[in-house]
Amino acid sequence: MIYLDYNATTPIDPKVKAAMEPYINEIFGNPSSNHYYGFKSMLAVKKARNQVASLINSESEEIIFTSGGSEADNMVLKGVAFTYGNKGRHIITSAIEHPAIISPCRYLEKLGYEVTYLPADSEGRITPHSVEKAIRKDTILISIMHSNNETGTLQPIKEIGEIAKKNNVLFHSDASQSLGKVPVDVKELQVDFLTIAGHKMYAPKGIGALFIRKGLEIEPLIHGASHESGRRAGTENVIFDVALGEACSLAEESLKCPHIKELTDYFYDGIRDIFKDKIKLNGHSIYKLPNTLNISFIGRDGNEVLNQLEDVAASTGSACHSGMTEISPVLKAMNIPQDIARGAVRFSLGRFTTKTEIQMVLDKLRLID
Image (cartoon, rainbow, N blue to C red; front, side, top):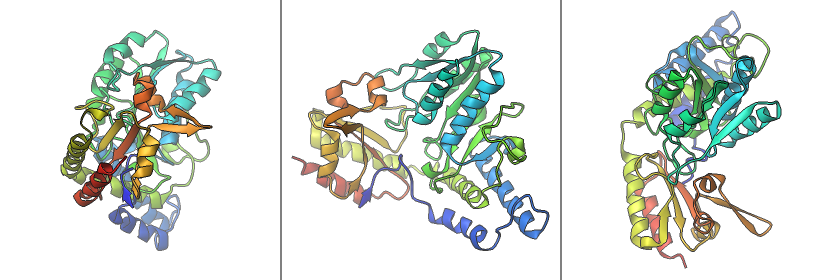
């Protein structure tokens, strides 16, 4: 099986697994315990927090460990709403966000908050002008993803950050899909909150982190004891914290290697050579993740294309329910015509993808009816 679905999840890197093992078998203490086992676990969590902070150029005390990206997103949206609701009840986001943003926004709407869902252009970008135009006196938060998980399109986060700061509005970006693929610097981007998901960067599922800029306090999503500086209750998951820390250190190194982008370009050139003008690249051709190709096979159904690619794991841009094809909400928000959107297939490469595997997939594509 050839795995080309790294945007969905990544395998655990062997070095991450090795870093976890001592905390499974030997150093099992509660970091809050005042003895050897607790002290060693506390030091491990502290090191991991420093490693995460280093990847995004933040301070270690600005990193809160969570159970994943969805919890971090919910923590920001609900935390800001419940903390700053007396100042305003308006939130700005986009129509192409992950469900971990859209769903809590829908929940907050039921509580009387107003949410503006900005449209994307035909290349999947949210324009800074549209963000600035949507800001109102009662706007308390802007949440725009750093990169889209389906198309790989990168958003103008730095420009939006400048607009948010100028208008004194808090700004959050979900960078789950970006970290380890492109540089992310919270100071440069001027974000107040940033979401991190471990399983998108070769750590296990069930671990993530949230950057909260120093000086900001929001209502916790999980109440209890004073873990994570009182911002997220629950005994620290030392094993997975260590895994995320190691994954972030490895990500810093992988950013220096052009291997994945070179493979992705080679793959795209090969697909264009086979299908000529019978394909369409969905998303931006320049401002995009180096590992992602969302391609519509014109006149075909994406599910049928994947079915013919035996032993290839990838994702489609549509779903079939009761005999009806439903296109991706992201492609729909980009105004991609339905007959083109239903032929979309997302190929996402990763650290362990080889040129031999890519050539094998190209050979399979040549045989598609």
